[in-house]
Length: 149
Ligand code: THU
Image (cartoon, rainbow, N blue to C red; front, side):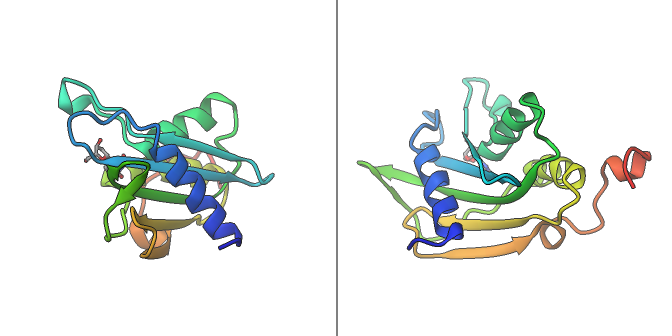
């Protein structure tokens, strides 16, 4: 596969290999495509105090925010599964959790884009694509606080 969607999913899969997930054993990678074509990735970061875990999408959005690029988001890919050697196992597409949908919404509103989100299985055979507005309808964001139009 050589199209943009597949390249973004491949970047998310590569990011998943750098997950720190010793408790769940579930590795998630997220790849954020910016409007200029750059790709920024993140992976989940777990913690011995389980509830403090950072999801892959949240880690990736924190990276773009810290670089001043929160308004530059165009598209997202998410891949998750259990590692088996260098591969990820899992046949179900991984969808962003509720908190991550809200975190992504912040960047999407700032980017003035109803971003496409590609959700891929660990084995790569299943991909479902959504607009953020499908995954988070009737959202609350900076527009509701009068910060953007
Ligand atoms: N996880 C993510 O990184 N993103 C999601 O959207 C769903 C869940 C992570 C959190 C935890 O480290 C592992 O997957 C199992 O829940």
